[in-house]
Amino acid sequence: MGLWSGSVPGHTGTQFKHRKGFVKQKELLRKNLKGGNNRVGEWDGRLGKRNNRRRVALYVLLLLVLPVMIYLSWQFSQLLTTTVRQETQQNYKLYQEERYEHESVEYWNMVKLGKVHLNSGDYAYARRLYQGALALFPYAWDANAGLTMTLTKMCVENGQYCEEARAYLEFCRSLPDRDERSLDGLEDEMNGKSALVKK
Image 1 (cartoon, one colour):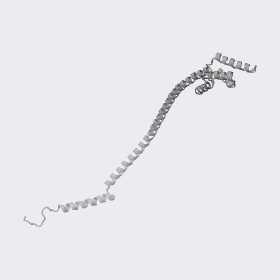
Image 2: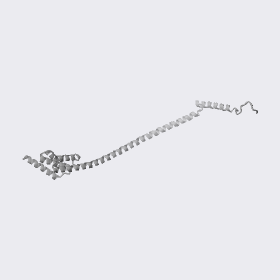
Image 3: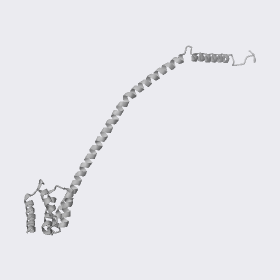
């Protein structure tokens, strides 16, 4: 072989063969896609069926999980409501106890101060104090008795509030922790005044 034998070195015709093979492969692929022996279509159908099954399974799972989630959220809201309600009731109970203690102290201070003013002859101020104590505890014996005593003194000494004193005297007789002796004494005192007025 000489330097130039009429063929290009390195080009033995394989390039042509490769080109021919690529062209045939493209034609084969076109035929398969058009619907001949369609393996690609088969795989697409299988994938479609799988995707449909997955979707159905997902919907069924969603239908099963959704009621459970709704039920659990409802239970949680009920638990939260019950907890808040119990906490509110406890706070209200504590508030009532603190209020009772505070009002109880305030009540006793007014009753004691009312007694001091009653003994000193300042009946108008004693009357206001006893009425303030009764605003806190309307059925307490000490405040009712003190107010009745104050009104009786005002009736006997000044001729004021006699009807009110009688009404409070009758009310005091209905209280469970009444002292009958002191009430009888107040009634005698008022009857003595009315006997003096009649003469």
